[in-house]
Amino acid sequence: MRLDGRTALVTGASSGIGAETALGLARLGARVGLVGRDRERTERAAAHLRRETGGAADVFLADLSSQAEIRCLAGEVRTRYPALDILVNNAGAIFSERHVTADGIERTWALDHLAYVLLTHELRAPLEAAPRARIVNLASAAHTRGRIDFDDLGGERRYSAMKAYAQAKLGNVLFTCALARRLAGSPITVNAVHPGVVASDFAKNTHGLLGFAWGLIRPFLISAADGAKTSLHVATAPDLDGVSGRYFARSRETASSALSRDEALQERVWTLSRRQLGIEP
Image (cartoon, rainbow, N blue to C red; front, side, top):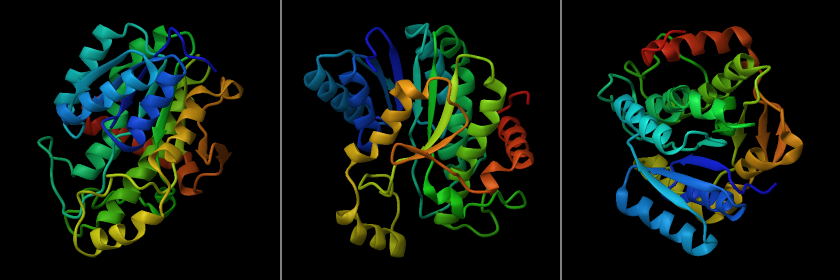
């Protein structure tokens, strides 16, 4: 599907899957906004996109673990893009050590989950202004190992990088399903994707045994370009028009975990997430 005259926003677009997703959308004719935390890297990714496609690329800067910066970013996007056709919530990372953000939230949950919820909420107006907007949430097969630990959500008593990551990725799928119900009957769709295990910088904040293991397996992982294929498919495939609340891997719809399909859990996490963000449920 060509995207001429349409606008897309991709978070975590300074490198890896996000940069390749932005590039793919631009090749189809979209004007693309690239969101990154580092100005130099994000500007470099945007310049590469312009050279490769001749298309328009805009740079937005934000640390998506900060609620204040997300709200500021959303204000800039609303000003520049009155209508937003595609939103790809892609930014995420895994962290060896526990860290609490300025908002008092464990960093993995803040960046990998709550940022999706807040940015999508803040961009509701331009998404509604587009004829048929699509939201794509980057989850992971790791969600199948995730559990929402309501008694120790931030890992204060016991922190594990993989446990925190799997919990956040489960949060992505739960959020996708809960939002899809609320969007039913509207022209906006939302779906979650597993990009595959990609040789990206997502684990650059790990060290010790986890960092060592990542370094060993990285040469055998798929490329960022291959990892972007499912996001691009879900964002653009004509046969997915109207399809919402689903989970995709290898560009095909597949079943997410049984836990992620628990409607009561979806609603509980929806309410909790919005409370953490200061949004009315």
